[in-house]
Image (cartoon, rainbow, N blue to C red):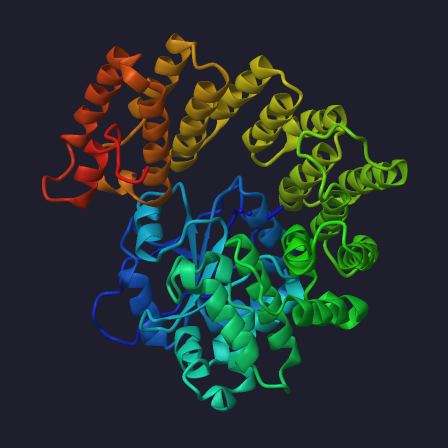
Length: 527
C-alpha cells in the first residue's frame, strides 16, 4: 500500500544585491499540470548553482520539489498542500524549486541529490547543505508544521542525529527530535543511515528520545518496527512494543498523530508484534480494525487518506490467508469498499486530486477482488484524467490479475504509446518490455520491436543515463539477458546491443555514463 504542474508567473523572485550579472534562472511557465500560485523556479538543465546563488544572496533556504505530472502522490501534494494559502504565504520564506523528472537534466540532478521516488521534497540551507527531507504521506496541517520546524531549525537532521546518538540526547532540543521523527526515512537513500543500519538506528533514537517528547518517541518507535519488519528482523522486545502500540491505538489523539503509519504499515507491524492465531494477534486485529473504521470517516483526513484506511481494512481481513485464496470478503466490508470508492469518485472535484484519488479507489476495488468495478471506474476516468496513461497501467494490472494476458499487454502497450516525457516514456517502455517477457516470452517479434522502440528514443547525452532512466534501462537489460538464457535469442540481443552502442558512442569518452550505457546488456555481478 506504500508510493508519486502548472506554475504561475513568479510571485517572489529574489534579487541579488551584487552588481554582478544576475544568475540565469528560469521561471517555470504555466504548465498544465501544476496548480497556479507559487513562484517556482526551475534549473537550467542540470545546473542548479544559480538558484543556490539566489538563495545565498537572499539568505533564504531552498525548498526542492522533485515529482512527475503522472504521479498520484505528487498530485495529492499539489491538491492538498501546495494550494493552501498558508503554504503559499510560507513559500515567501524560501526559494521554491520545481524539478520535474521529465525536464532536461532532471535525472542527473536526481542522482546528485540522491532522490528516487516521486515525490521527494528536500529543504536546504542557502549554502546547499541539506536540512531535512519532508514526508509526503502526512496530512497537510502536519506537513506545514514540519516544514516550519525545518525553516527555523538551527541544526540539520544529520547533525541532530549525531547529537541524539552521541550520548547527548537530553541536549537535543524538542524541535530537533520532532524533525528526526518526521524525517522522510523511506526516502533517505542512505544519506543519513545505510539501509542495513536503519532499523537499529531508529530503535536507538526511539529509546533515546526524552519522556517529554512522546509524539516523537511514538513515531520513531513505529518507524523502527516497520524497518525491522521490512528487514525480517525479529523484535527482542516485541511484548513491550506491543503494549505501546496498543496504547497508541487506544488513544484517538495518538492514533491520529500516526495515522499514516497505522494505515500504510498495519500488515507489517501486526505480524512483527504477534504470532499467527495467537490471542495477541486477534486482539491487535480487532483494535486496529476499529481504529481504521474511524479513520475511514474522519473528515479531517483527505479523501485519498480515507480510501487508504479502507484499503488497510481489506489487507487486514486477508492477513494470514494465502495470496491465491479466492475466498470472498465479508459482505459488509465489500459494501464499505464500494461506498468509499463511489463517494471518492463523486465528491472529488479537483483535477489534480482526482489523479491521486481515482487510482487509489481503483486499487481499493481491485484489492477487494472487484476487478470489473475497478476497470469501470478507470475507463470512465480516462477522458478527463491528468495523465490517463497511469490509469492504463492499473488496467493492465487488473487484466493480469484476472488471467487475461492479452488485455494486460495491450493496456501496457497503450500506456507506453500515450505516455509523455522522456523519462516517463523510458520507464513505461522498459516496463512494457518486462511485462512482455513475463507474459509472452515466446512473442519474440513483439519483444524485439518494443525493446528497439525504447532504445530508439534515447537521447545520446549524459543526462539520459542517470537515476530513474539508468535504473529502468538496467532493469530492462537484465530481463532481456535472462530471457536470452543459453543464447536462445542471441540474434535479437546482438541487434539491440548494436543499436544501443550507437548511442553510447556519442557520449563523452571520459563520462561515467558511457560505461553505464555500454553495460546495459552485460551481466552484472550479484544481479
